[in-house]
Amino acid sequence: MSYYYLLINLALLLLSFLLALDKKASPIRSWKPMIPAVLASGLFFSVVALVFNQFKLSVFSAEYTVGVHILQLPIEEILFHFILAFAGLNVYVVLNAHFSKNNLEKFSLSFSNLLLGVLFAMLFFTYTKLYSVVTFSVLFLLLFYIEYVNKLRFMYKFYRAYVVLLIPFCLLYLLIGGLPILTYVFEETIKLKLGTIPFENLFSLMSNLLLSVYLFEVIKSKT
Image 1 (tube, rainbow, N blue to C red):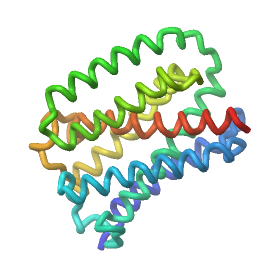
Image 2 (image 1 turned 30 degrees about the vertical axis):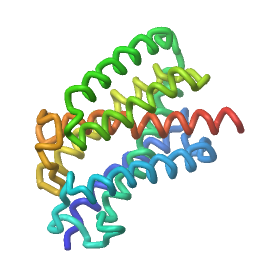
Image 3 (image 1 turned 90 degrees about the vertical axis):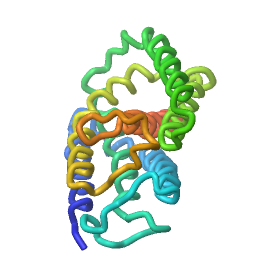
Image 4 (image 1 turned 60 degrees about the vertical axis):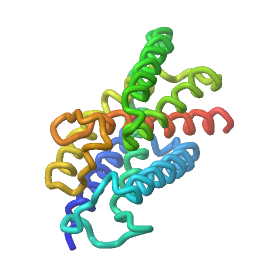
């Protein structure tokens, strides 16, 4: 039994609470839309992680976890998805409070269309790789729905929060993959890594944040 993965989760949670103390943004005041958004996003991506684990696409080392599992998935991995959603929303709220101008929103659809094209190409070239297909498909469907069905406009602010969240995410995943707490079946990925981070994980982070922000904005618009 080890507390390494649990401590990584606690570090991300601490960062989230530090952001929540920001007086100007005061993310705590947004708890009503934030809580259901975090719960829904965390649950969804925990199920995705469970699917990956059941198909043995990702393997966790018992040496770095506390040994508590839910359907063979370490409790730390489940906590990670909930805490990541919470951290992402705190980053989103704080940035929106300090940088309220939205002048670049007019370019967000063009960027999203470019990203949709990239995702479609990735799906075409990696259709035999289950980890890649699931990761790219989730983001493609989310992004397409939000840009072409959803009426709320927030994508520029979302992309800005994603870029900022990449920094702690990459640092944490370098630890997770470097120890290694978590390893992936290389043959089921695009076989491209940033250090120890599979290329697909940069897109899974975007999916997690995008679902959280979308639900947050929808709920907030109705309260």
